[in-house]
Image (cartoon, rainbow, N blue to C red; front, side, top):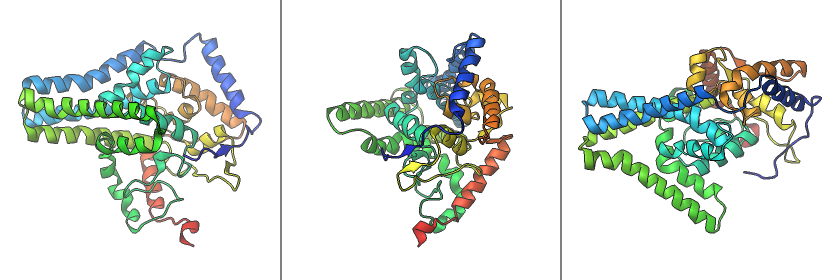
Length: 361
């Protein structure tokens, strides 16, 4: 992260201050909290049960290969749901007004093999501050054979990435569990005594996760090694594919921008306008999708108001859209999931062949 990248002071006749006041008034007028309600608690129980209960069933009943694999797939589906609907809100501090509740539910990420400390740096700090700014937002950094920015070097195989990208998306959570967190630790954590405390916590959480998921079933419950390995892979492939696709549909799509800092290391827009240019909503009328993915189809609202629980996004989206129109600010949306998916595929195609003149001169 470059600490000197800055945004210009608020412009467009105080768009964001006006929007924030209107959103705040919405909660005051309706006498509702910005955090979770009973429906969120029910959803949390459902998604956590979808992850834990199938695993318990596998351990106790040691079902056939087909049943076992289906249960692992259900666990992967639930992992993605937990990540998007529970962990995400909690680690933004928007699940509850209680810090300890957010901490406990935020650590559901540890339960599924990730590091909360790394995630908060990558997502809360880098991604939400420097959205779609190359070398600042880790979410759009080049990843092995994938290119998500027009400002990095294009390689010959990138022209095929729209074909093979989805396979690599499925590997993301496996990579996250075994490799990514350790690489991020080296980049994110400040040197000193606290570094080793953080590393110890990271290492212990990984060892416990590996023991519970891969050692305990074989040693104590006689689960077939082959069934376990295939099931574990299926679980993570399902989770990785869903998580990566959903997050990509908000930023790496046609219509969003990838601005570069000017000679003063400054982005030419203020932060709120930058978010409106780099973020897109999708399938806003699909209530079932919105329930499962934690309102991440309302990414514009989420990026502007990270401290508001996602259950409120559909309501405040109307305020955001109206205010954006008044101030002549872009409000990007793909009305259908299929439209968003195609916009992402088209972006992958463009990034796969579009050269940055500065890199080819």
